[in-house]
Image (cartoon, rainbow, N blue to C red; front, side, top):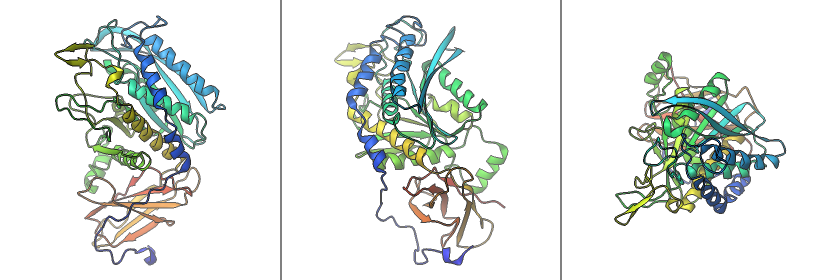
Amino acid sequence: MKSSLLIFLLLPSVVLGQVIDNRDASISRAVQAISVSNMKQTVDDLVRFNTRNNLSSQTDPKQGIGAAAQYLYNRLTEYAYVSNGRMSVEKITYKATAPRSETELELENVVATLKGSDERVIALLAHYDSRGGNGNDGAAFAPGANDDGSGVAALLEIARILSTQTLGATIKLMFLSGEEHGLWGARQMAKIAAEEGWNLIAVLNNDMIGNAEGSETATHDNTVLRVFSEGIPFSETDAQRQQRIYNAAENDSPARQLARYVKELGERYVANMTLQLIYRTDRFGRGGDHTPFSREGFAAVRLTEVNENYDRTHQDVAEREGIRYGDMPWGIDWEYLRKNAGVNLASAYNMALAPFIPENVRLSNASRLTNVAELTWQAPQQGNKPKGYYVLLRRTDVSTWERKIFTADTCMALPLSKDNYFFAVQSVDEEGHESLSVFAIGGR
């Protein structure tokens, strides 16, 4: 360890100071290009299919889930046409049965792939199926404007904007069916990703990101978006469990690192926006399309509105005692949806341009009695060589990274007790695009 890397000798504790936002002009322009009118049109178009219930018609050209799938395919094909070969669109057909429905169905996921220059994959999810009060009624009006027309509209707008951009990582925009009957479409895509060995570094599931008004409490807030993430991974092995316990890493799973990354990038590029980290996999007794990816061992998070309105979610359209029920476009806060689309776009765009993550990030003196934390890591073996690295640190009772220290080396010594802080490392390129963070682990 180089003695010259023993830094901040006069720093008795970590004190927050000025925060410098490194903004890429191309990412800023992309976020500013998000069109509310385009997203309004998408939601209106989806509502006009009457229902997108998984049990609805597959063949009617104007109504039902089959017509909705074709609509999405056509829209994405338009964007692919101007992408100069960078974007491809496909329908992935699968069969599904689940306890909520005794009928075997053949459903379609619609997937747009924005091909990057390396093997990494980033997935953005939204489900396009809908339901009303009776989830197994395939004929009843089920507009699904917010659940999940909002997520679909955001992803279509992101597809439009990114279709002309050159990326490092590949971005897959997945429009999933089957969510309301057991996450069928997500299960299919997670299975494909695992079986085909995708280097899937991040999954962002967008489900209900347009409503800002809570039922019962009369709260309204279009400045906060929740990010749900698992702590102890579903896929944890015995060896990983032992490592987690030794390092007290219950709050530092890959999904938690992804959630922190989305928070930082979302707040960096979208004004008047706070990302609230929810340290749960999902809401109580409920699930989302990120969960099948988590179960396959991928880092996956759910982005969803801070206030849910249960007068609108899974309700038939009606008005009773002056209260409007049902998931109609009038329930969407369009400025909120614009900002939430920007959070997704900025996070995925920056991640796609960033270098590969550093390798073998270690707290190398974890077993020694010392008040100096010594960190070592290796440069990524793939992709362009990073300009340098950010060493991240936070106190153990703080949930987000408090400081980022740049170095061009692959080691750093900090005069801080390793028992009082957590550490991680990111790769960073010449333009300031940082990778996901890798938690520093020690061992006996």
